[in-house]
Image (cartoon, rainbow, N blue to C red; front, side, top):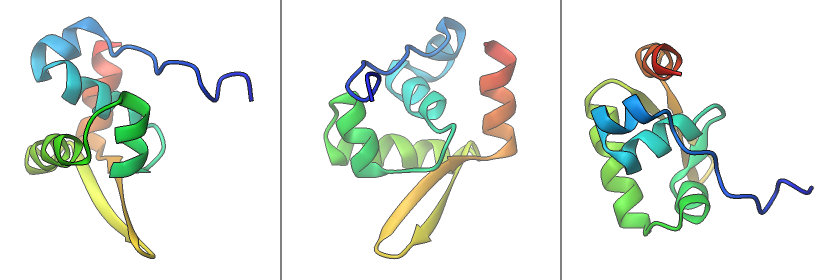
Length: 88
C-alpha cells in the first residue's frame, strides 16, 4: 500500500534516448498489461497523449492491444520485452 502513490520508476536512460522519455516510460511500465487511463494517471499525461504514444509503440511492434470488457489493455510484445530487458 505504501508504494501505491509512489512515483513510477524512470526508464533506463538508453531507452529514453532511443524512444523519447514518454514512450520509454510507457513501454517500461507495461510489466503488466494496463489501460490508457491507468497509464495516463500514473504518468500525469493526457489520455490523447498516451493513446498517441501507444499507437506509435504498437505500430513499431513493441506493444499489443487486447480488449478486456470495455477496456483496451496494452502489454509488451516479445520485441518490446527484449528491448526493455536489453537496456536495463
